[in-house]
Amino acid sequence: MSGEHLVEMQGIEKHFGSVVALNGVDLLVEKGQVLCLLGDNGAGKSTLIKTLSGVHQPTKGRLVVEGEPAAFASPRDALDAGIATVYQDLAMIPLMSITRNFFMGREPTRGVWPFRQFDFKEADRVARDEMARIGIDVRDPNQAVGTLSGGERQCVAIARAVYFGAKVLILDEPTSALGVRQTSMVLKYIDMVRKKGLGVIFITHNVRHAFAVGDKFTVLNRGRTLGSFMRGEASMDELQNLMAGGRELEDLNADLGGTV
Amino acid sequence: MAVVAEKPADERVKQSSFVTRLMRRPELGALSGLVLIVLFFLVFASGTMFTLSGVITFMRPAAQLGILAIGAALLMIGGEFDLSVGSMVAFAGLVFGASLTVLDLPLVAAIPLTFAFAAAFGALNGFIVLKTGLPSFIVTLAFLFIFRGLTLVGLKWATGGATQLRGVREAVADSPIAGLFSGEALQGLFRWLASLGLIDTFKSGTPKVTGIPVDILWFVVLALVATWILTKTQTGNWIFASGGDANAARNSGVPVQRVKTTLFVVTACCAALVAILTVMDTGSTDARRGFQKEFEAIIAAVIGGCLLTGGYGSVIGAAIGAVIFGMVLIGLGYTTIDQDWYLVFLGGMLLMAVLFNNIIRKRVTGER
Image (cartoon, rainbow over all chains, first blue to last red; front, side, top):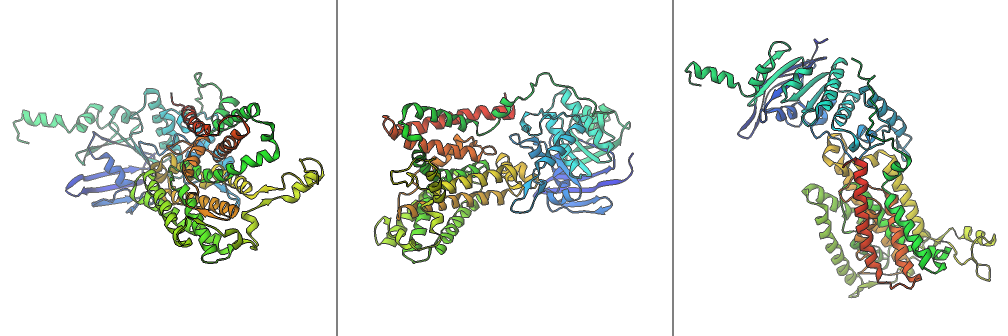
């Protein structure tokens, strides 16, 4: 179910003045693959996402999208290349309806100017259908997003990105603020997105959530990738230890009397 | 695994009934306020208040405030304030009056010039707010004083020392477009209704109300157009989005800066329209025009269901808010109640509206 390279980062570095936020990151996402990007706080996850989504430009390194070298000057560029980011704060507006949120910035219209209208009929239909596809029963697509649960909101945000033609989804800690059932709803949906052939970069610091859906795990620590493992190549505990900065390695080193 | 098939009906969520859907409307507060006020005056005011001429009497100040409130509501929904609209009425009045009487421009040139001035200063307001990231509250508060001061200085320059500028009516007397901005409209209709005996007439047969003052027509048309734009178009969605969460809107590709700047321009142009209508009506302009109207416009918008935090509200609500204002301002004169209770009412109404809006917002977002 995988094979085609969607996004590849090679030796990406990002410096902010004298601060080195990313110091050599390599990662690869293929079609129909969920890549879990694991890292503790301060590992450089946010900087990495922002570099991938066009907010920051890398200081060094190569970014390859579908076999072609790419450089994004803005988030718009990344979006046009099919890389959609679902931020933690969701880019959803609680006071606005599901339909209004779903099509925000990309409203379907009908009629001729000056009588051009937001095509609510079509938009409501699409919103309801897309929600049903995820398994969220939206009685009224005009209800405010604020009435949805955290998991549902996260799913709406993902569904929106998928509907508008994303090839690679970057999900920034989509489960970190959710309860158990909400989390499983989001994880199920991530699995569905993978089956559609999209590439998913799932950022999390929760190894358990990562293990539930991940095909591949890349561990980030102190701005560099410590390694990538296919499913089954590393255990949960091993990943957890790597995330924590390879303390086990240090311990081992100390036992051997080394001076690291 | 087919997730689609899984559709658990959540027993904790009641079906949204007609009533709860009604409760979600931002206009609900204003509408129930209007009903209460009408009931109040039906009981306490003399019967002449709700005759046709009585209605037109209170609709005129309501319309002038309402035009400002429409701009204020759109801007508030877009997430910004404009405290300078009252002063802008005076300033635009000066530009309008001076271009007619001092520069001797024809009306067809004076009106676009007035709107151009207002639009430019509205854009300046917006530019400063968006470039500096300062709250619009403080930036437009500065312009409240700047415009008022400029009006005083300008009036003295234009009149040679006075703070009132006269002679507008004489200057526009023979202009073909004067009828668009002054006098009454639909006079033929009213004569016809009178001939059918549907409205009150004097003994001579001329109707007691000869037509609808144009400001009321402007108010109604603007309220309808603004409502259509806000609720039915892409631009409307961008206004809600910009006010709801500017950052999220930007991330989704909404041109937030352009939307907000346009709203500042629209608000200023509403003030200019009120200036033109009132100056044409009285034939003069003075330094106190539009005094404190910025607050009344914002209060009307809040009564109409606009949240101070932006992203939610209704133009129709704001228009109803303005009608409530006009009704109380004029209506107290039909009762035995002292007129000065007006201000007490104003404050009380605002307080009630804000409390009510809070409840509505919680309902809409399902906050508990």
